[in-house]
Amino acid sequence: MNYDEIVSFHGHSCPGSAIGYRMTLAAMRLLGVSRSGDEELVAIVENDACGVDALQYLSGCTFGKGNLVFRDYGKPVYTLFSRTSGRGVRVLFLDSALPEEVKNDRSKKLEYILSAPEDAIISTRTVSIDEPKLAKIFHTVTCDRCHESVMETRLKSVQGQSLCIPCAAVSGEE
Image (tube, rainbow, N blue to C red; front, side):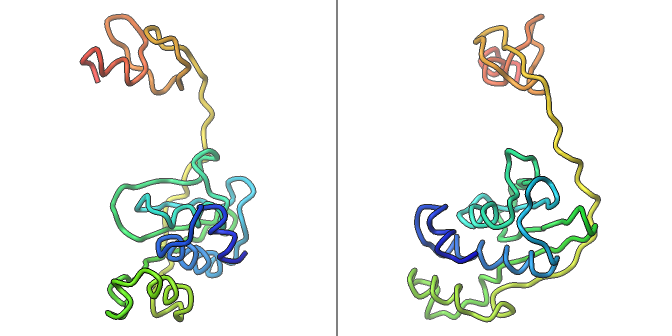
């Protein structure tokens, strides 16, 4: 897959999507995997920036399938795990390794990220992690107050009522 496909999916070209593109390609190459059709791959991302769109597009890991895990650490780090091989790889973007002359120029930064040697901008290492559980499918129920559908595991019991999180918050019970 080429970077133009990422731009089309993400909506614009930016350093963040280029970072995600390079990081995901590196991880998938090291694991010897292709795009996940179901849950063969699991991705753990440590930020919610533009690059995660590249990761989703390239790897097939998505929130909807349950094989994309978000940890809000604010780091340019992805960990990809192959259920097939039981192997994992942690990929870190080396922002501090960018040359000074590109750091404050968006177009130069983008060009550099897309063309730099992988080892100049990305650090990788194999990791051992406990295999993440397969995604669970939960029943959908109705909130007793707003009558909207909600996943059963997200209900709160408040004064004998089963409430969704927003309704429970209004009740002061969150």
